[in-house]
Image 1 (cartoon, rainbow, N blue to C red):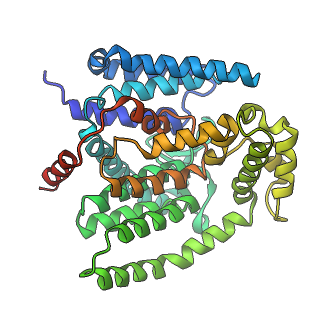
Image 2 (cartoon, rainbow, N blue to C red):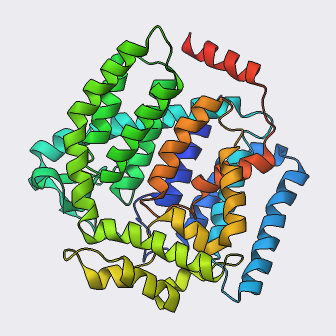
Image 3 (spheres, rainbow, N blue to C red):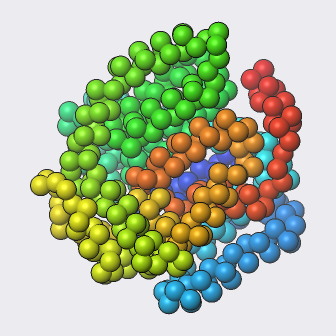
Length: 400
């Protein structure tokens, strides 16, 4: 039986996402479940893994050794689960190290699947709310037939918030915004663009809505031509006029509660840690006992609403800020540089718009220790950089 290699690659990307920010179905059941997902990825991509040169795996070993030495110098315990996340990223990269042309099509197809899957949640959200049951999984999401998942809290007009196969709506919105990025980039029909926007708006996640606006704005600013300038500005103004009140209301509500304060408080922690220890950062896993972080978080609390006790006791949810805390300023700059230079997205305009989505979500949810995030960072060290002509020809062929 002939195996569809693209289907395997797309499914593997989905498993990588699920490993990093999927519904925690194995929490409390299988210790170290992240290793299970790494093993599944290894089985799915064994042929590609065997074909990747030894020197590429040498990069992986070098990163592990450097991390262990870095933790020793900092006098902190290494987060062992990140080894599995990094290994998973390298396993996925074994499919793309020769030339990552197929990556954008694979990720695009995953994003498209997520859009349709998310849209299927809408009728359940509207008409079958009473049929949802609360699971025993971590964070206790609600589900319909254990196939569709919703956040345990209430969203717009008391409706459950869609979280897809992710553990949190903002994580799910990352995949939906990635679909939006590729919908715009490949110039798909207006119907597809409308469905992409509907899928994002229906999640009712502030981070996702703000990122969506940023993605649309970045795309049209980068692709603005004189002939189409007036029409583009006109259409963009109409879309923003429709969405602005809702996005502003969601953002204002977020910033006036503990949830928004947590994100801003994390920036305050990162600034304080960077000032105190710019080279080494601090122990991210014990940040709630760090006196500098505690003081910064207290000073950053600006609202009378929200759960102040929970705000003080939780870890960092702003992954962008947590990178500074975990790695220090110098390595943080290096990580962001490698991220922005990823050859997985060979077209510069595509890379810019994609990074608006990724970095935007990064500021609202803790995904900086996932294999999906480091996939782009490590790709700069492992993958050959394709020529722009080949990338352009590949896109042209896809659009045809």
